[in-house]
Length: 120
Image (cartoon, one colour):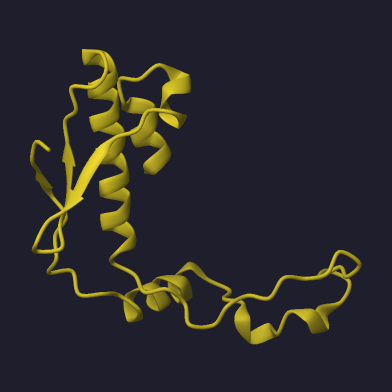
């Protein structure tokens, strides 16, 4: 979703990594992208579109809680495929339904929408 949004933005390919954009967090907790007059018209449009992509991605991520259990990094001399003891069986899910159920059971309240745009 995010990569596709960036690819649709009207930006020179390299600009997606270097164009800063303006945004604000409004009183109601919503993110808002703003237009800037600092660069060329094309650069300002690019910046706004990149901000909007990031805003939409943040909205998508806000629907889910972060997992409480953190994965441990393996040392370079251990191979998780050969050493099954490193990865407990209960951490794996065997079907998409399990992952979907996990996502649904860990959702945030979706009442806070992130969809406003105001000039900054």
